[in-house]
Length: 274
Image (cartoon, rainbow, N blue to C red; front, top):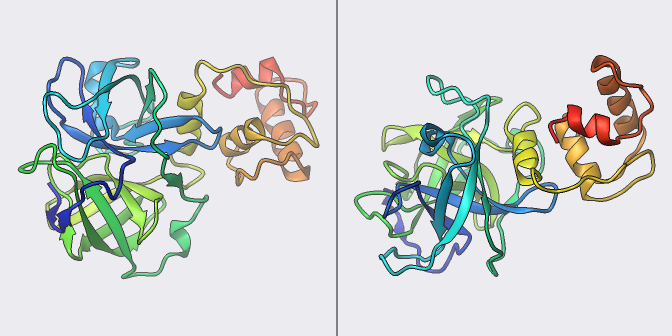
């Protein structure tokens, strides 16, 4: 439950309620984003879905107030295989939807965006938890510190709590997603950063592209496949295959006993998880 804050109504239409396999009501929150490779997916927390296994069928709904007649979209879940249920590191799951939605996705923050945010900066949080289960609410929180994996926040106008897991932490007044609500005590939050090279960004792109074919790319190539490779190799996903990307690809190929040609073809894509 977002304690305090306000009823959200239609203000954040890309914030979803996540209904687990076999469930009839939402248990977690999610957010529709466009991954670096361009695919629209819903992000939520791994701890909401990991018990059901990879590829489990889930449903999401984007209505501001849940009811049994609310329109739902079926999806398949992918849980970050690095997720640690003890520490909650890499606590991210991706839901690929069975059909398109007309809702405009939120925007994933640029790489390392949180690193430039000052202490005591306010962010917006959105959630659908209990006791207002299925009722979208919004509040502000204040960031007190950050690490390479987490953002730590305390209540501003309100605070997230039970059932808000997977809801977004947004740059105040925007639709830019910095982190996902993860864990806390209903008075402070420890939320998963989404914009670090060692964090979940590469997993998000792999999960978003599991069923898609990849083109052969090389020095001078541009586009979403270049962004995917850059993200997977820990580079800023700018979409242009330049000297830094070439060096990183050759290094990767050498470490994985591939011909260090700098060309990303079938074998290199496979080594990257596709």
